[in-house]
Length: 213
Image 1 (cartoon, rainbow, N blue to C red):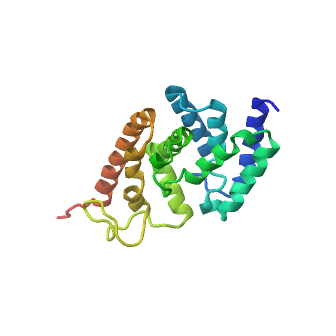
Image 2 (image 1 turned 60 degrees about the vertical axis):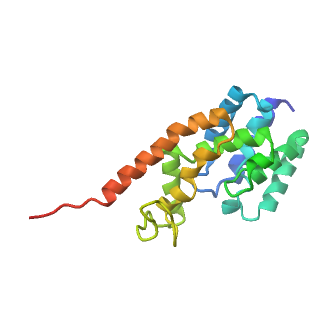
């Protein structure tokens, strides 16, 4: 099986297994992460290009938010890769899938260039204009509040029930400082600035008041 056929089969496998995901974690999220990962790797030359592409395509298959039991997701990936001539990179790919999330232990401790590349790509897609759109899409999907001023202090610290705006402080605004590669860090700067601009405008509109004589 040649590389082109392996990529096509992986695309079809991902599309078939992510049908129940929300639109912030759908096929187009996978496409964006793949494009970002391939660009970062082209600039950094950290990992095998085919392995980067396959990993980016598979990175959300075992996401417990949608897939349920992650262990079953890892077995699904393993079985697919064995059947498609990708056994030689299976362990590398599954290691990234297991450790890519924001809640995983420090990436630096793992010292895995493949993880550095794909994780940066995934984190970049969580910030900037698309990151804002994805955050509110997922908040709606989970029926979360847009914002609750009673649980966010003026300094941005969050206490109590989460909202989509509190998610900015809990995760999104932290991602700029957790990028692994130089390319990822440079790309995160602009997207982080957009998050700050968005929040500034949001609070301006939320706190709008007018005195009526």
